[in-house]
Structures are given as structure tokens and as C-alpha cells.
Amino acid sequence: MEVVILADPAAVGSHTAELVARRAAETPDMVLGIATGSSPLGTYRELARLHAQGDVTFDGVRCFALDEYVGLPERHPASYALVVERELTTPLGLDPANVRTPDGSAADIQQACLDYEHALAASGGVDLQILGIGTNGHIGFNEPTSSLASRTRVKALSQQTRMDNARFFAKGEDVPTHCITQGLGTIMEAREIVLVAQGEAKAAAVAAAIEGPVSSMCPASLLQFHPRTRIVLDEAAASGLTLADYHRFVAEAKHHFPGGTR
Ligand code: GLP
Image 1: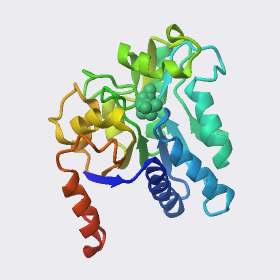
Image 2 (image 1 turned 180 degrees about the vertical axis):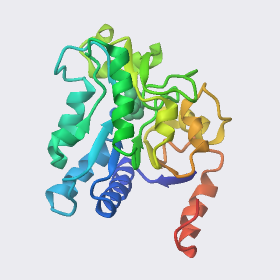
Image 3 (image 1 turned 120 degrees about the vertical axis):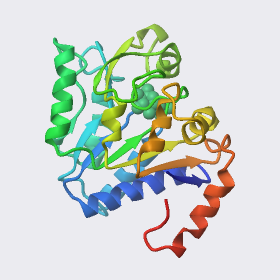
């Protein structure tokens, strides 16, 4: 696990955007796994800036979102389908036909979950997955006690998550109670993962994910088993790490080894 600690949220956004842009240049038809929530917005806005400058193209990039609320009215502004359209598809010039979110309004919601797994498999799998982390350690919407082997499924949201996400809705009670989320087993199949976190509110979850035991009580801790994961943090999100100085040393010393260290 590579842990990169940067000064502030702006640095997290540009570092992560550079990584995504590099991968898109290496593999123009890559499959990019996208997270919603506020954590990756700095990254997406920096990617939009690079795209507007003509520095990077996403013409052939295929995207899969991690999750979606169940039961929101079509084109609700907080639906992840709309967030993805607003923050990614339009500003990055993605082909809408190449961008998928789980169908949270499907008549047969269980079938929609299976269809999403099939679509992911048919794409050849995710090359680079972008993740945020919830204050309770969730990734996607895999709440604490999620099966570490779970696949895309319907999941009940925790009270903590509903409170955290109330800011995106007019009233707290408007936050849906359920979602479709890629499972932890699904996410772990991505060939490369980058998780971004900013702010002190994430410090405890980040520390549990990186330094705690692997446990379904902190779903992000499963990433300790992933061979190619980078965690990009600002100082505030890194403030709960006991080994922060080690990670800074690793980052400084890394150029001594071609290909870096992990
Ligand atoms: C959200 C999403 C996650 C996101 C996490 C953190 O509800 N389902 O994909 O990473 O919770 O959210 P935020 O980045 O807004 O803090």
C-alpha cells in the first residue's frame, strides 16, 4: 500500500488527476471506476481543466460508477447518475454511451445488480478505480459488516452515512434508505486503486483502513490485501496515522528505485 501525504486538498486533486491522465494516455480505452461524493471532486475538476486545455483526451475511456441510490425520482439532482453526468461526462467530454451507473430505479432491482456485474465483466474489468472513504470506513456504499467477498447488491445505508449525505438533499429524511453498490469483492478486482481523502473528519477512518486490522468493521481496510493501491491524503486526513513520517520518508526516497517502491 502506497500512502502519499500532501499539503492540502488542492494537491490531492492535482496528484490524483495526474495519475488518471497518465493512465488514460497509456491506455486510451481504459476502464475507469468512478466514485461519487465530495472526495474526488478536486480530482475531477483538475481533469476537466486538463481536458479543456487539450492536455488529455477521454474519448475512448469507459466508466463504471460504484453505486447509486435506490428509488430516487428520475434525474434527481443527488442521484449519482446525475452527479456523474455533471462532474464527469460533460466536463471530460466522455461518450455518454461509455458511462454506466447502477440502475437504482429498475423494476427488478436484483436483476439490475446482476446486470451490472455482467457489464463490468464484459468490459474486461476496471483498470483504475477511484475511491473515497466514508467517515465509517465504507467504500462505495459497503457499510461496516459488509461481506469482504460481496458483489454488486442492494444494501441498506447506515444512519451515519444517511446523516453524512443529508447535505446533498433538501431534508435529512429525503436521503434514501437503500442503494445498489459494487461489492467489496467486486472493487478488489480492479487492477489498480487510488483512494482519496481530505479533512480531519476522515482521519479516524483513514487510520483504521491503513493501520488497523483488516475487518469488515472498516471495509476500506480490505485494501490492505490489494497489491496496487495508492492512498492520497491531505495532512488533515493523515493526522491519525502513527506512521505518517515513514510514508513521507518513502515518498522522498522513492526516486532511488526505478519504478518506485510500494
Ligand atoms: C459516499 C459514496 C462513496 C464516497 C463516500 C464518501 O456516500 N457512496 O463512494 O466515497 O460516501 O463521501 P464524501 O466523499 O462525500 O465524503
